[in-house]
Length: 76
Image (tube, rainbow, N blue to C red; front, top):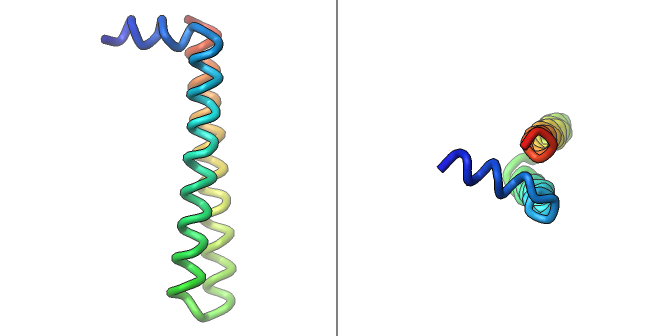
């Protein structure tokens, strides 16, 4: 339940492991989307714009996840 999750994330090793998982998840997503964009979009300006969009979206998602994990870990 909710309290058990908060207690588990209150332990530093669990919070660090979850943060590393979140960072690698967004990194992997960015690399996968990069390959898809390179394979299916051949108009160079569109490809560059999509690559930038994916990079910023993954960075925003990773930062939001790390912020949430840190907030839970430090307040638990």
